[in-house]
Image (cartoon, rainbow, N blue to C red):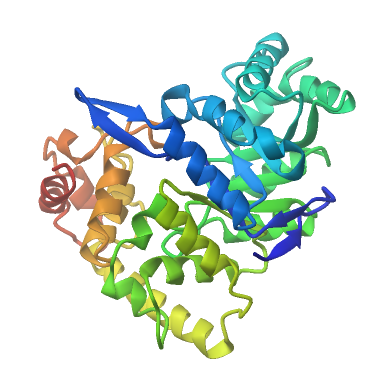
Length: 377
């Protein structure tokens, strides 16, 4: 396993992080049941293979992730870095404290190494976190007491707002967690801004929760030569970015841990030729995707609340990159998570306003119907 200095925190962290949001589970009577014994085994195997950064949150795994993670790391708590999150529901410092104390209890620990303002936007940061005696003021007090070792945030907002949050953090923020993978590079500029301020950078979704690891000839062709899997392409791409400290992968099986740890242990970076080939192939895929939608957003806003460019991006995961399960999973999250508060393609009433504004003269209504048929099944 490779290890790197983590920004200004002084920590030395494994390049692969264990995301504890997709722990082993099974279906029983129509409900998802999380297998505690198997989950602990997966976390232990990650630790055995050198992973020392473990990330959880109060809402993961039907609210069971913190409890299971806490049990799993009990024997080596002082040898790893533990990350969890505080959902910023309001500007109340008292409510922030209550959520923190609950996480400490569920994790069975008296300190948290990296404590995140969870999934924030610039608006939430300015109007809630920075409120007088609000979450930022309180987390600084917890840090003074040693309960929180480092102040972090996870980001779900427009890419251009990432650098602005760091700026307004006035030096208090120490690490950031944001989305980044071979298909979604929108946060690259913000990640670079973070590293310039010496923040540690963790990326989520490097293998799309395993979905980018599904067999895809399109993705595997992005690297020349002998490539074992799509997951190898996805992870090696992320590791090749010098702005990235940790690739945080939600690993739900021993096999996934074994494969990702092996890739993270490969000390050979992408060569100049491999990087050039990867850029060429991703550029060609992007060109093909642009034939269906360039993402110019002239069609917006949709009167029915559909985020048309975003929906078509998901369709291109299926149509261009041949990772249909990844596309379906993303589509199923529409209007169910805070950063995807819009309608899916089924809300279209075929008013035609979008097609009147589209500079490509795309048949948007027809494509919306096609998208819903392909991804909603």
